[in-house]
Length: 114
Length: 109
Image: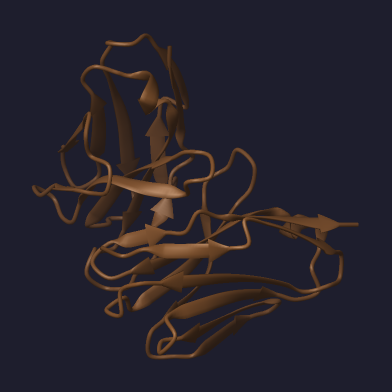
């Protein structure tokens, strides 16, 4: 099992460009999450999907959109990238969002906006 | 929403000594408290978690304690080794998982 797979691993964008970060999990998990990690600020939740067909805002959703394409895949889209969105993005999944099951993380996408 | 504070932000200990990282949370409804270890350039990985119906949990050299009344929980690493050097994150869950800001632990050989 690969667990949680994120693509791409690295990306450089210019301000105003758009991009979609991809995430897929093979653990048959119901819930998926997108976080951003900035120095000194830990992991902050952008959006999550409790189950296929549902998405909800997290702590820092502005400037992002998400799509839960199917049970396996959850994508994050930046419509018009800004330098403030330079960060490391992590996707995670868990069995579900209501019981206390651990979240499993992907390897991250390092995104730089010039 | 939940607010999690983590201290210290950096911690250096001699190899073989113990390390303690402390976190406080604000929402008394939080009932799940995981700890993640993140090595440089790698993904966060779960090392131990505790649920609100227990006060302590151990796994070899790692232990976590929870004080629900005071709303704080701690990670204890005993007999530290160089491979314990990493950034450690605590988290608390009511409806969603909220992370602390991390502790950079350095083990000095």
